[in-house]
Amino acid sequence: MDNYLFTWDHLLFVILGLCSITVLCLLFKKYGKGKELNILKWAFWILFILEVMKIFYHILVLKAPAKNWIPLYFCSLVLYACGFASYGKGKIKKMGECFLVYGGIVAGTIFIIYPATALGLHPLFHFLTIHSLFYHVSCVFLGLMLLMHNYYEISHNDIIDYALFVGIYMLFAQTLNVVFSTNFMFLKESGDILPLSFLYTFVGAYFYPLCIAIGQLVCTFYITYVSCFVYRKVKFKNL
Image (cartoon, rainbow, N blue to C red; front, top):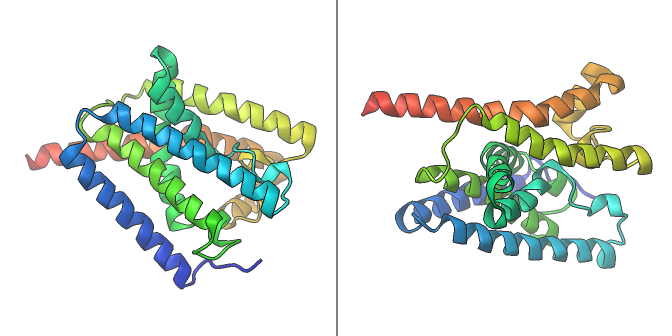
């Protein structure tokens, strides 16, 4: 397969992604206050249907092995988090919201800027690329949506619920990796993705799983937490 990274397809992918997020946020800011829960429910079912379509496409068209289509990668957790946040109660709901805010925004933004697992394999106008674009735009938008009208208030204590949510799926993914020699959540090896392959080379095969686990469990949380904290400080000073 061809690599479409750093081509016109890549530039258009980034533009479409950022413009879509901007439009969705503007529309929500004007019309969406108080509708967060309904939007989460709609988003869950849309993402669920798209994920089923993606699975069938991999099985029936690409004849791909299970490791290519089982939704057990970091960004895939947005689907489960959206279900938790929209239909869960108490702790379950909080864990889902935590991931959407602290994980979805970071993961979605990074992917839109550098869509290695999409354009690294397929051109822009391909079902799997369009699927990835919509999926990661949803990651970013849903997280921002929860923050926009103070539906969700960030707190340093959220690290507990966030790490619990991510950790459960990470433990399950790593169990499958050990038993079936898969690479879910890229916990075993880099998958030839440039930033991860650099980390793999730098720390070595022994320490790589630990570093990528810490990155997904802790670093994603603090990137969002610190960004929100700084934004609010700057906003307060400008009032």
